[in-house]
Length: 182
Image (cartoon, helix red, strand yellow):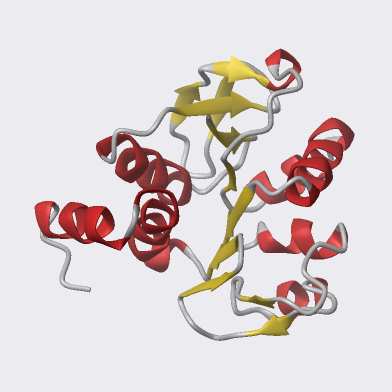
């Protein structure tokens, strides 16, 4: 199972691009409403989540994804239940994926200590990575933590998620099928 968390104010492309790519890869991805069953992006796109945060039980997902966008990332960070799950799942070996502003959530939880990571290239977000080694690369994978810079890197981020879960050949096949030049 893969969970994609959505909170009001999320960045549309940073959420829906990974959802699209991972479903093209044949993976079971569920969108999870953190701020309600109907979640509206920063760009005023409304998504009806597959499930709600309270529907999640003890299952440890293979991966979970935190899209950026402000106030979306702030709304994700405000959920104590989500913060608790992020910490527990990271410690138990789930892949962690966060893009744009959302990597700051991982930094605030102390999950990036000594890890290489990227985020939206604004000093206030870079500083919140805490003890991570900041990279200006579009996508950074350090073990089971995958971070992306911003909306412009969403497809490369999504393809890296597919590579982590399905292998590089599958990710390259998807990249070719969508005419990605990367």
